[in-house]
Length: 350
Image (cartoon, rainbow, N blue to C red; front, top):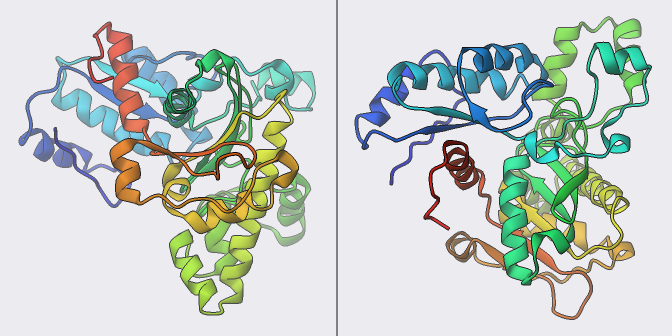
């Protein structure tokens, strides 16, 4: 019915921004909030009350780029719409059933039990949406699909889905692990972090800021974390941009291949997220070098307008290997669906 996008993460001004938006639209029946990290004590999408709000504050440091800004909006919305139910929709819930071998880190039992150190996985709302669309496109039930989903955007991850359930994923305790991302490093040798602290005296805050905000594509290129900028710069002979893209696409191939190792077969490779949707060069460079998985290049390039209107497109050449699909990012729609489900409201939009 209406939307409002902000260019900066939510902060203390969220109340005023939200109040202005609400003055232009009908009063909502409910509010769904995307919360990236559920922590160990919340295992399903849930109504937000004082207890849930406190638990969210407790896990904010595990996803500092996401949870803290989201809580500004939660507080603002609950203040302005105090008679309306608010539902927390978590990116981690999709990965609740990760098998033990997939969510367990090889660290001492004390760390795992006392510190609750484990792999959670993220981008679950996006994966939920993409999985349903993929099943529809292939004309197969979700519980008979084995696919690798790749969410490529500001944050990037891949996920293995076997018969409707997440069985492996590249992100871990935090959204910093895994693939190279726009500004985040992705996985890094933990020994390198110890060495940077001991040998070069970098503080925890310096490491945190650099790995979350100044690494990834931005750190590699020195100019931009946006693949659109880097594709243009590479075409103009920018060697750093070329290295950034090559490192990124190799990271994606590694992640996709490692996820395929948790499946019996590969029924489809699915791209979603901003980069996954609108960067055909990246999709092509990933797929053309994944012949070991029977994924092929020569992909078709759908018009972005058509993709957004239709919601998905199959882009592989028919009869040439594993199906490759692009699904328009549907996190917002999935949040709406999960909010209705928690509240027992019929979803008439599907």
